[in-house]
Image (tube, rainbow, N blue to C red):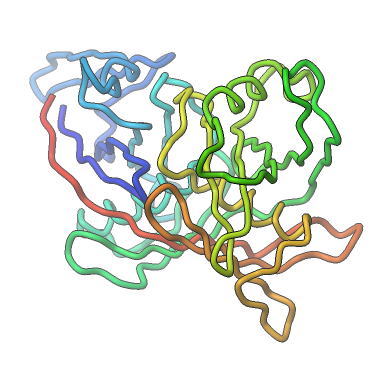
Length: 290
């Protein structure tokens, strides 16, 4: 089984070209069928294990789409699926381009997406990805069942996210606080949510994320960065730029890399944000044979 490793702002993924349909996923188990009828199977969590496997935050299959360029099947490193991944979306677009594809509209778990490659140096591409509109945001003065009262908001940007504004983000205990909210907040059960911590930073915002399914802090989370920027506007944080038509852009510092999110805020009672785009790097790392 051949995989290609890509990373988007440090969020790393294993991607396989499955347009021939020879790879089948069943409850976290991947089975590949060879041209001679032979089979090879391995669990996604074992492939993504950073000590006993290749190591990745997630795994994706690029598959044939109906009426679009391709279908994106995304799985967390624990084998769970059924959600969108913003950094993964940019990486699979870069992978599609490297495979010679020229059409970058695709279907994911949360619906249809389109993308553009704004820059390409051969190894790293800057990809602008259209995300889903956000229809609702919920505010929580305090989440019950957590050890530290948490003030923030919940929204779905293709994956469920909780966003909390904090001070001194660099020194913040992301893992323990994120795990506490992700597992124990009664309002987020039973599915749980990724947990994002944000603060103003150099004319934009800084974001750190605890990801469910990875169960740790990741270097970046695309859907979380989108959720954080929308939450930042609701929290009164000044955007990096505002157009005459009201469209806003936030420049974002993740763990190491910089990205941006732009969207059109919606009037009250008409939703939260539409025409949402996530822009950032997607880089090829290696070709891997398991």
